[in-house]
Image (cartoon, rainbow, N blue to C red; front, side, top):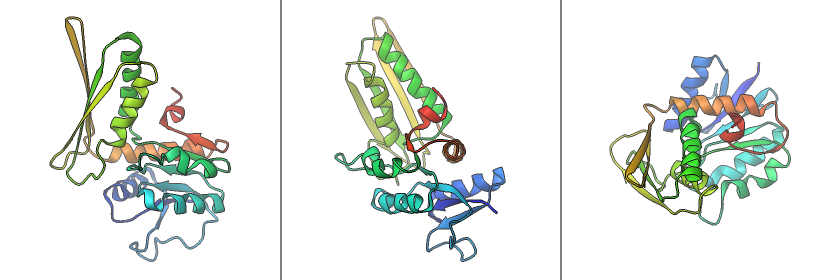
Length: 224
């Protein structure tokens, strides 16, 4: 029986991915010494692909596993060093297998990125991004905030200010704020649980199984 390989067992996103697999009827196994023995991966033969939301320190090893097994890799790993981007880390693997990496897999954030592009094209003003997450999040600004900044600056020469806030147990909130003329505009995206990220990652894996080797993001997955 085919299955999806999930990296990690105890983490917040690992749990959300397990729940999403169960809700969608996908069999899964776990690449983690903390998982029960019946869930641990011993044979990669029937694996559809790997979903990894772990840490940069293990990213290369996970990518090597995917290449050896000749299966797609979907990664939501963030917190990269400034001189070591995800695209650079996964470059070699992407020549052999489909690799989908993104800092945020929710549909709402991809739509917010498209709004950031519209603002950059039509409003010649600087953009402020407010990036709010739970106190346990280690990277600041978040990968999502950096993604929004990148998408805006791909079409605009205006500067971007990012303000990061870490408080409580917030799943993730991102606000775009821009002032122009006698107007100002604020766009807010709030994640109400981790399920949108997990569902998006599984959608990305389903899409990746039909793709040629290469490095992709949710922009390609959603066809924008």
